[in-house]
Length: 283
Image 1 (tube, rainbow, N blue to C red):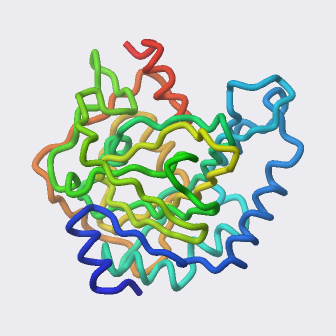
Image 2: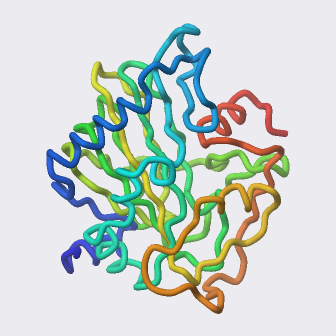
């Protein structure tokens, strides 16, 4: 369970940081499993359905950028996603009936880890209400040098920032973002961040010689139903499953309107989408 202070912080700021949520042994187990999964993969030879490689490396380079859906494909990660301690904390924030939505493991390799531009998670997959959050597990010590998470506190209660240009979803904020009030969410390995789906966030390139691996799990209230926005809807919903409580018989609506992300074509990841946007390919 979370403390009253942490619950208040989440609702007030759009996130709360929980040091030592995972024990050193739990972190070590997750990292050992991760190394087993990525071992032997190269830019030229890897399973594109399971992982994404850093593009700026030789064809025999072994730097992985992201693992797709570890909590679906690997038992250790799935067990974590359904653990009582974690679900108790999520319930404290969004209620007793919970859907697991998706998972990913961002690797941020030393001196190359890709940048993530400002965005809000709900822009990618509109729902009938905002009771959706991401849980970010730092598996390495994270700070400004190795590209820790940055967030804008208190912005989760406003309207969605523009993420569209020339009629198509760009995967990043397309309006100016005042980052002067951005907060760096630094933390030791084992730290967990609970982040509201409307909280603007970003991270810079890993400039250090240290990894910054972050496991990200998303949950939502069972009565937060997807709003249809084309074929990407079913793609994003593929791994959704009930993890606590009961399925909802009715959708709960808390917004009168919400922007629909029109994707020019199917996208496999935020990294790919933002890169294509920077190159002016989404128009």
